[in-house]
Length: 251
Image 1 (spheres, rainbow, N blue to C red):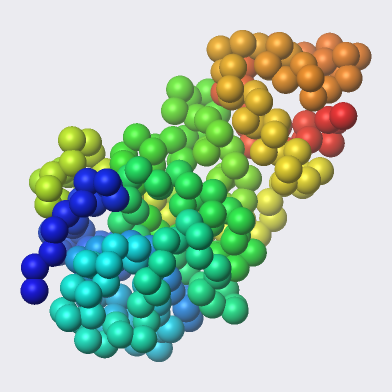
Image 2: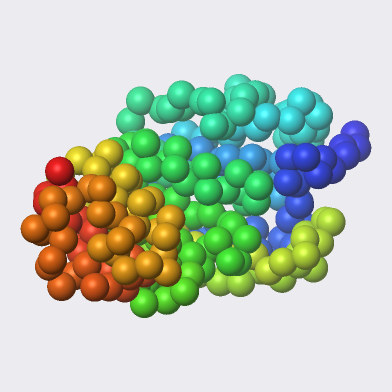
C-alpha cells in the first residue's frame, strides 16, 4: 500500500532508521508507562514504539491516507490510533504520559503551546523540530535565538538539545536542518503570579525585542516601578527567573 506526501501538512518522512533508534533510545532512558506519538506519518518511529514492552501506547494522526497506511502496515496499531487533529484533541490518557514525535514543522510551535496546557500530565517530551526552532526552545538569555518559546517552555521544563538531523534523513529532504530536543518537567519551577500574566509579559516584551523593556511593557506596570534598572534591559537579556519575578509586580 502506497501513500502520498502532503506539503500542506508539512510532511517530511524520516527514512534513516538510526535516527529513529536514537530518538527511541533517548525516550527509553526515562521511565514512563503511557506514551503518545504525535503525527506518526508513515511509521518510521511508530514501528519501534509499538515494540516497547509494558507501555500503553497511542498515536494521533490527522491524515486519512496515513491512518489507512499505518493500519495496513502495522496491524497491532489498530486500537491505538487516534484519527484526529492533535491541536483539537483532548488528553488521550487519564494519568501522566510521555510525548514523542517528528513534529510537522508548520505547526510545531502550536504543538508546544498545547503541551504547555497539558504540562501537569506531560513530564517528558522528546521531539524533532526544525533546527532553528529546536535551538530557540533550548536557547538561554543573551542569545539572539532566545524568545517567547524559550521563556515559556523553560519556565516549566528543563530543555536539552540532543542531536542534529540532516535533510538527507528524510523523504523528501527538507531545505533545513532538523534537531531533536528533550523536555523534562521542572520539579521546582519558578513561582509566577499567574500563567496568564507570564504569557502576557513575555509576549509583550518580545514583540518589541529591540526596545528597552521599559518601553515595550509600559502598559503592564505602574510608572514608579518602571524606574527599576531591570527595565533598562531588553527582553532577550532577562532570564526565565527574571520574567517570573516580574509577574508579581504587574498591574
